[in-house]
Picture (tube, rainbow, N blue to C red):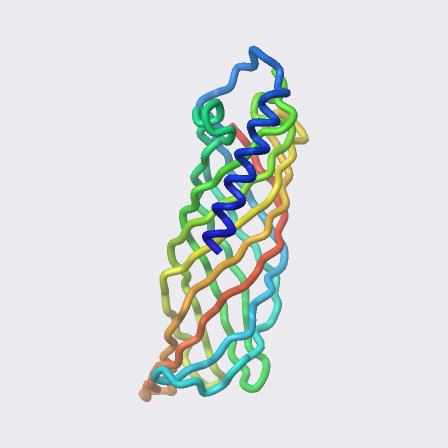
Length: 223
């Protein structure tokens, strides 16, 4: 996944040099482009194995598709544009979804990813009024943690937080100077250990990897 992201960055750099060669001269670009975003869409989890002490107990278990939603806060740094052909950004992302299990056992799951990402974008159709482009494609990757809430019927809800990774790609188009719409694909990955509590009895932990693709769209406000 990281190799694909680096290839994406290199392709964006190539596109960036081509786009900048056509940009109008004398456009004044602010050094920082800050933004806040909200998004919603759908998550598509991959099949996963449920394991006990490293041994698979249920293989290729289906995790349910569900709505996916969240928010971002970030900023783009425009100084690298002249040398690299791309702007470099950093953002904080929070994404929530419900990859429940319906069969062979009813397992309720709620996952919340939170992480920091490094991004690269190519401003396209740069003008005086839109110095960061009328639209831009972007890619990114990063990591943080994922908090998983889990519950079987008759048990107390449990929670586990694990290291997590996310890769993303998308495009954003400005509808005004400060407001933009975007569409984004995201891949999230985390491996969890779940301990179920039946009254006073704590069962040995079960391991579950939650990895999913998310297709989302949203609105950004740039400052």
